Picture 1 (cartoon, helix red, strand yellow):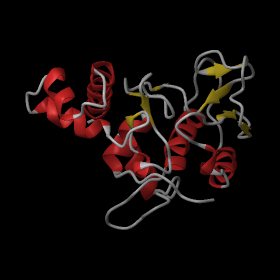
Picture 2 (tube, rainbow, N blue to C red):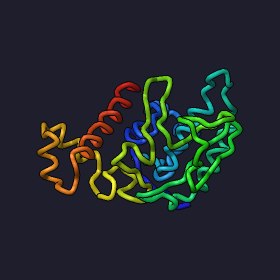
Picture 3 (cartoon, rainbow, N blue to C red):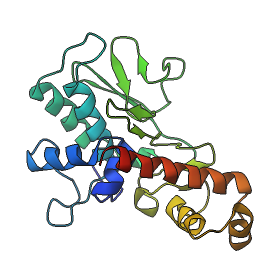
Picture 4 (cartoon, rainbow, N blue to C red):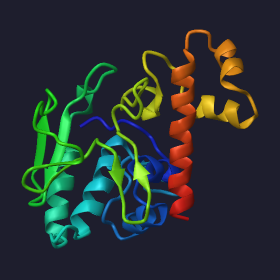
Length: 215
């Protein structure tokens, strides 16, 4: 597998939706070690973002379903480690889900007609759909976080960006924090429409809330 994406702890937590303290704890306990760098500056990959959701979901009992054992969790993580991230592009990406048994479901065509929100029949979790947690965080869709935004593992180190551009949402949100309105930002980026800029700022607000909720 080619490792794609490069996320420090804050970003990995915000995008996955898993609280930052939990992300660090799992790294220390060798439950989910960051794939790109496990040293002083830890870096998680795009696959790790899905892995964080896997561990959280399988280890948290909910809706009358008991939490699963670590062997079940490691089974799913091993399958994710073999996932080919070159399947992602600006236009498409596969559907990825995990059963409570730890079996990974991969459909390059997107599981058309089967997915209904966050889960499908048989207690299966879609790893790319928005991911809410008991703590109140909510990870965005890891493929299309907003209609005009994309996340592609092999592009811009896996950072959210405006579709068909190299403009990262973080850059647009930073301008917004400096007091620039949508119109002024659009004049700096004439190829972007106002809606894409507003979506970028909204996404970054959501990610910031994830970190504040879990602090």
